[in-house]
Amino acid sequence: MKVMKFGGTSVGSAQRIKNVADLISAEKGNVVVLSAMSGTTDTLVEISGYLYNRNPDGAHDTINRLAAQYRKTVAELYSTDEYKAKAASYVKGVFDYITSFTKTLFGEQEEKVILAQGELISTHLMAFYLMEKGVNVALLSALDFMRIDFHGEPDAEYIKEHATAAYEAAAGADLYVTQGFICRNPRGDVDNLKRGGSDYTASLLGAALGADEIQIWTDIDGMHNNDPRIVSGTRAVRHLHFEEAAELGYFGAKILHPTCVLPARYANIPVRLLNTLDPSAPGTTIDNVPEPGTIKSVAAKNNITAIKIKSSRMLLASGFLRKVFEIFESYQTPIDMICTSEVGVSVTIDDTRHLGEIIHDLKKYGTVTVDHDMCIICVVGDMDWENVGFESRATQALRDIPVRMISYGGSNYNISFLVKDEDKARALRALSKSLFEDNA
View 1 (tube, rainbow, N blue to C red):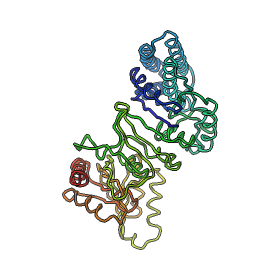
View 2: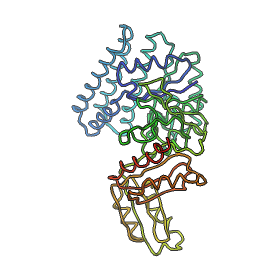
View 3: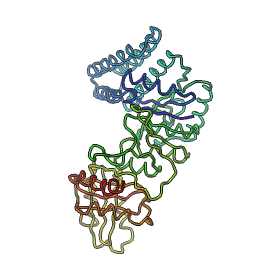
């Protein structure tokens, strides 16, 4: 059994829903996880914004506009009056429900309920279409088995127990369709997974059900060894270790959120990134199998701010780093990179909402310097320190580019460089030539 996840663009129109239906119908017994149709969640957020601001007229206009889009999709998707009527009735019910929030007090919980409607609509439209085509499909509600705990983290034991029960109760179906992103919290209220969204659902569900494979379908051909918008002649990476995928996801690759790989990795279930526009392409496989001596890809993370704290008091001072880190922790600001010396420490952040307060507090311990408009370039692959030469090839490639920081040794899978944003393209091209083209 496979878990197959399709994002918003993959089900973004009637024709794309048909294409996905043809694709998933080719093999029986799989679980299909769907996102909301592209653009829907953004519009639901817009509706919620009007409701927060007690502007029912703005909400009504936006609701009507989105409802009209769905009526058009229903008209184009189904060929029989029976299923056109079923789908139209369901869609009308959803938008009547959303409209009812214009007459009540509106808060965070109500917003989460509204945001959940996108995934509920897309899965119902898909299920109705499959039924119309004669497919024996079971529509499983993610709200019956996906749950987060009081810390906002997935409740793995609950998910395993209830997802297994839901799957077994519908045993014998040709396909099982469910929603990504949405869940319940410990109080039983509608909530969502936030980080990673539907990808996270697929990974959690695959681990819970013991799937043979988790497939993430997008309209992009897997992960590339560089950014194709900047570097010409890039190639899709056909295999990644889970840790390599996590590094790429964190440092700029947009296909897979780093959090999403964890459940699959711990359950030792391979993940494949596949292309809905080219289903025959092999895509990218992510698993726990290492490839020694191989550099896989280069990624970039923009909008980085570097902070240097220099202090003679740091020399042999016990607790200095702890005090520095506690300042960032107190403002819930994660650190990306860190480099230390005997008299100073440099760190990078990408969340500058509390930068002023952080700098103010850091000045208690030393002289603070801030560099804005920076970029982290990350080389990902088998970077174990005993693999002589990889780090020197990367640093040599950047010999003509000013490098503010270098991070190496914290992971066996990456070496990271901090450069100016204006040098990003030049750095990526230089690394691509050194690491991939010159060794092709």
